[in-house]
Image (cartoon, rainbow, N blue to C red; front, side, top):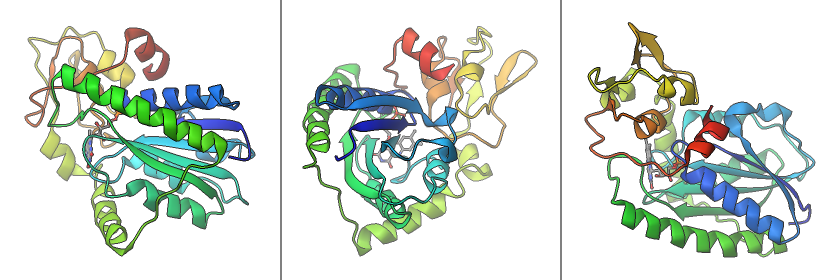
Length: 263
Ligand SMILES: Cc1cc2nc3c(=O)[nH]c(=O)nc-3n(C[C@H](O)[C@H](O)[C@H](O)COP(=O)(O)O)c2cc1C
């Protein structure tokens, strides 16, 4: 990268992407960059500093990403050559979503210096045992070590899209554009098990889009903004939030990190 002042913008549901953003920042700093790490839910895309190199990190959802991330990327201003890199985290496969988003940014005048997806533990439906998750995170960290070093020294590569991946992206965009409507919310359908709920209100505080409200002291999930990011169900301390799709949940962040980033 030519400009070694880097601002990383991330969205994370359950923590994986935050960890990737944090590790990337550390490696970039070790390679002479000045780096900030920022949560995209707390900053408007039109207010970011376009004279710095920009890193965008987000989780893959339905081989695409959450509406909140798409809005952030789509609303980034046009520029004249600002360097940008895109990092994604995924449980299995992304169908090259990062490169498709890279194309969107190239059209806005950004210079795409890297796109890379990292396999991290799955936080949706097929959640694995923690011992497997530890191994998966360790492998991702070592890949970040080499990729972020390459980003800093200018040898990182940005992936390329082809017709197949473009068609897939059009299909997944169709789904993501309907993500916040009734259909998907009804499929996942979170509900509160009243016997287990300790009324601590954590789910309400940590929801990135303020979608959860109280009804007779218990959380309800009937807002239309839910991203299906799994944060509420994963971090509920009394396991009182349920969805028939989620037999097991995933969490990775410490209490300190939850307080710092989610609240
Ligand atoms: C609703 C939903 C859909 C997902 N879809 C995909 C997918 O299409 N492909 C994939 O590899 N992982 C998928 N995942 C898994 C996440 O991308 C992965 O676990 C990611 O690292 C989670 O990041 P986070 O902890 O920062 O939220 C999905 C997760 C959720 C919650």
